[in-house]
Length: 243
Image (cartoon, rainbow, N blue to C red):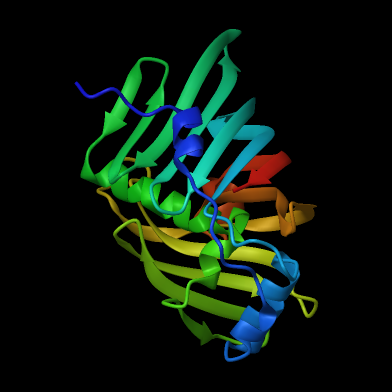
């Protein structure tokens, strides 16, 4: 069996880019997209290829919420690794989601899940988390569609899968909500695409990037089922570094 790459190794494999953010390069975009990018990336900031995040919060496992701490690396060209620690019945549990070089895996302690469906679901997670690496949304291949004065949709290919990300932004460009079509299996159903997203409750600035720092995330986003059934992840970003 091929040894899986570590979180540190994924971070070390990311290289800095020479491109610098200039808003003048994005004047052709819909107004909501311009507002978002102008708020999310300071002028002159190097367009990063990766972000490393430290976070804490609570997640829903079964019917109960459990506090967690986690570290994550997102590398635009290769994928992401998220590693968390929590407790259940007083016992420590180690969790990990990863998608690296086209292979996805989800694990809790010794229980692991992999295969094409898990890989596709992990890609959907990376797509949603692009708001923690806003430089991804500066790619010239992205097709932007204005959905309204405060909503814009970005369509592109991410890690070999189609991505369609809907952003809701304020009049000042502050990100308020994000939604993606994510592949998943809900309540034992067959895998299919469902609305997955989150509400941004606070933001912070790190290395020239202003990103969501407190979010409520889950399935059935945009429907009444989000709060009652789909909401499953609350997180606070403690620190972020870019390269």
